Image (cartoon, rainbow, N blue to C red):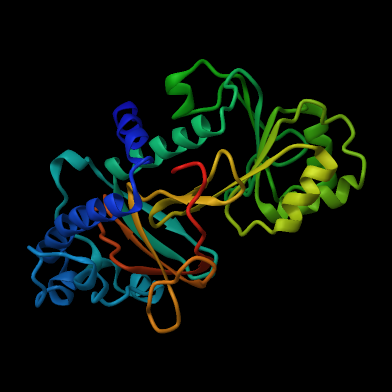
Length: 321
């Protein structure tokens, strides 16, 4: 993880052109591997010259749909994975579209997920000595109010680098009034929850935050964050909201900039396209479908995968990333 963080630290300052050249080099290696070991890509890529992968060739590859991922996952999976990538892992998600999918990954993709998690913590300068609380949905119905669950530290990867303060977990299926009572009782410094749950908590507390005196930041995950929710949080609780964009299929897609409320694609690990209705790349200010290519998943390559989400392309960020 530490080596990856060093690698990512330098790449975040590369120019977009340099990043794209590296992405295409990484994609070329992935495409050649997928054609050799994945039945679907053996067919899809058979006519392409993968020794000369440029933007035009890459964009000629047909999009992979969520329905294809769901129905043909066994044909997408590679028959073998590079030994240095570690064991094959499985991830299942219902996703924002409600279409459940299961994808394969590796120990390498898991380590990359941890490294980007650390990047997010470091970008936003969180104090590891403090209390970190999570109010998130738990599929097994555990950690319900009134008690939730108390943990001795923040867990990996942060606890692999630092001695941290305690962590708290509450199932967001708990009633909102009990969630708020739990938060007031523990008075955490950091909170992570879903945007819809945050909106519910804001409505529950009204104009009086009452006793959340230590709160420094709220992170949101798993859903689109409305600008109105971000503004109401700042007005009522006087703390910033830091959002990030992930999916189980490919890991982190974008992190919120540490200096601005918009998002930075994790372009050192993922090639992201935003395409209009004609399949052309959107420019700044334009909205289109999100298409992902994970550059490190050699267990089940997701090449030009249309995730079912829509996004707006931003202008270059003043921070230089």
